[in-house]
Figure 1 (cartoon, rainbow, N blue to C red):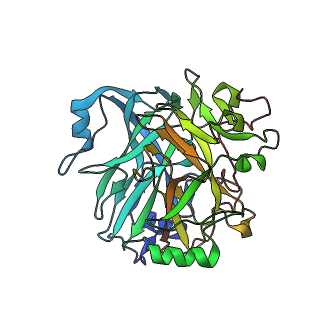
Figure 2 (cartoon, helix red, strand yellow):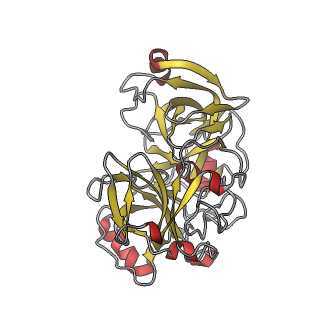
Figure 3 (cartoon, one colour):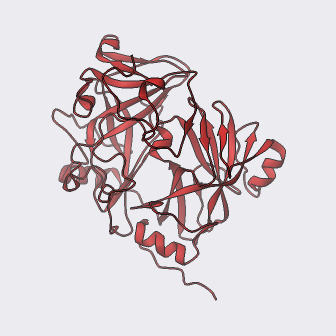
Length: 388
């Protein structure tokens, strides 16, 4: 029997619509969905049973399948069913348990989950015939794959581990700069005492906090904390464990006394966790994406995991002072960033339908609501002596 394709209004599909997409066969899965996999406007993707260590990252290109490229580039196959170590500095391709059968008016977009980005695990979606990462074109029908490249910490992952998230978009869903400016004036997409709002161009600018304000409210035992720098040559992190690891074993803290002339020098091949100076709000009718890299503002990547579900930072949910966390890597040369310097931009998009549940409105799955300077969920709460 032919399934009826729902008629979605333009915008990012929200949770009720994603459920309809499953029922209509637009999204499929090798196993039933699990609790917490559906977010207000996104779907967590699960790793499948197999992964491959490959010689290099690749895109299959028009007319080519990922599995055919794997025949040429795979070094060995890895069984993920019992768990496997993915080593830092290596590139892997893994099957995804979910698949797509998109109508001609719906595209799919992906990005790493926040917890993945904060571990410096570089993860990108690949589909058959793709000439760019993180997207599946309208009308795509087939499997999904994840490119996984741990940069700082080796990780333990398994079938069912969730490293990335997917969203579906009907039509061309993105707010213009004029519409974004109007929304900023009306409700304050970014806000905070003493914040100077820069021109909205290709999204809302976000700047870095090096004053310690982002850490003081969330880490009262560390009033001088401004960020974290990842240690090298450290242990393994199981991506499915929450609150399992001591901060000091993996991170060293950056304090105001470490700044040079009020700024922080980002060294190449080092990974930093910093906080935005602004508080961020994503209203119920919208979602937001943070641009990962912009050569106009510096030779660094400011964010891996850039998707914000509706409800993020909404005051009515008790989260009116929620900062964005910046996952930062410098490219090629040392680069100085200073207090208030623009690091990235937030691009807002309308939802096709307002979800029944907003981010942070339920007990599960909202690890970063009301956050300040915060490490990934895998780590215990930091203490005063951590990161010396």
